[in-house]
Length: 129
Image (cartoon, rainbow, N blue to C red; front, side, top):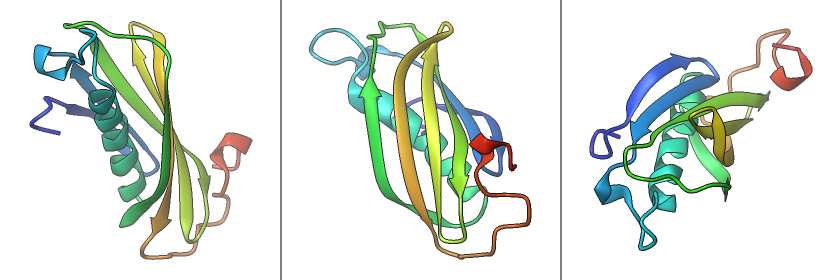
């Protein structure tokens, strides 16, 4: 994260916000933000949000790209937990710039500790958090 100039803006169990700015070294051959840079930004928020509940490792990840970004664009990855179980958790990470959705990342982790999920916690997207 440090090498890419990324900063943590928010961190709590199951959520994180990481921000960065597109620099010249982050560009692809089209002169826009490289997908790898945006993926690293989203993956950082995913890792922080999931590991804030205890040690976890990625099982699967997917990213869809919607719009290009130029040098100087400020960008944030906002991770939220959408499902939590004893052994796995799934996260949605919205990559946004100037209020517009740039990319969408989803990822699932294996929770290494396997702790029981506290009562009332399960699928935050269904109002159980």
